[in-house]
Image (cartoon, rainbow, N blue to C red; front, side):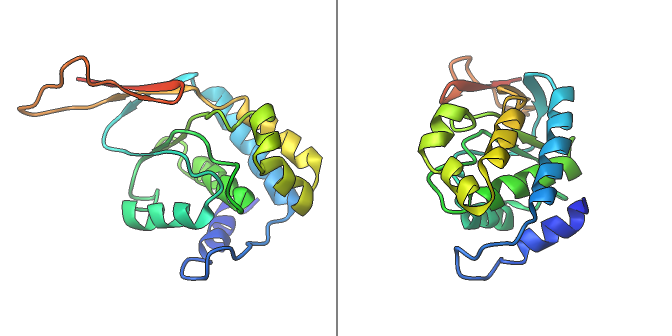
Length: 185
């Protein structure tokens, strides 16, 4: 799979009317899933990360929102990212969303991080739209491949932050859904 070409194709809709479908072959998606799963299996369940990095959550298949986040926050070649899960469901372009995130994970494996959210599981993604989109655009087997990969996603991250002339009290922990992202000095 040509990751750079796939990223370029996914980004080519920037400036287009939201909702424009990006054609992605099933074989490309299967390769993305397989490679991403291999990377995830080499990472710990709790990531130990360092600032600076942009922390983003709840994309929910809103592909054009993801593109705007990248435009304003910086593209991964120059900016570190931690995404907190809930990449799929509710939105209309779950496949483009998760494919771009997986492609960036493959290309920038040491600076682009994905955690598992509650929508990256069978029960929830079956009900809230990801299953239906996979079935409509491809097949149920592809949805099952995604679920296998989702099962390998890290569950939490600890972000080390360096401060000069600033201390945070220990109560400044941010809890997001079930996953806690702790700031430590």
